[in-house]
Image (cartoon, rainbow, N blue to C red; front, side, top):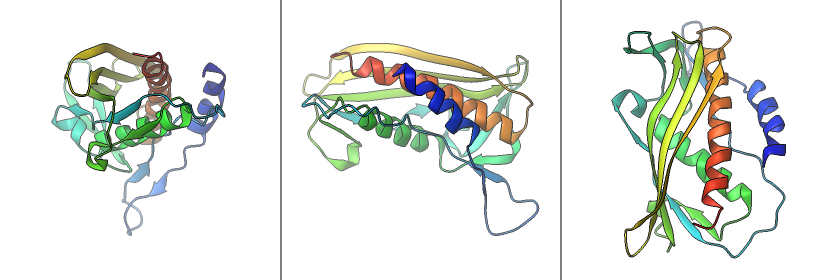
Length: 195
């Protein structure tokens, strides 16, 4: 999977902002997040996973790009927004990344009502630009829960930090996308270890 990180970095650099809304001038730019690319591995008759939408504190529940000030306060970065609510966007890219790994029998959402072996639940602990350190910080905690028993079979915190060239919407979104790419790569490896 580490061979795909340069491709991910290139994809991150090429994130194309789409003009949000129908208006001109003052409309915020809309940014997307990338899933990991397919690995080219054949699909295995492995486990089935249901990926639950991540939870987070209220600011992370929106489509806004967040800045964490040195004192700890949170604000929204003007001029930019995500293509969807952040939890739903992360869930979608995590599902796509797990599917692209080719190691699982199926990957679905709870609403798909597909029988599964495990639920993957997660919490957004940080997904923001740190104005104090000049870094994009992505911090997700995750748990694999066995269906039927409800037993937590594995738990881990995934963190990545990427330098931000300047605190603006374009640079912040690109750095957060790169940090999420690192976290997704680690999460996919972790889920696919057989737990």
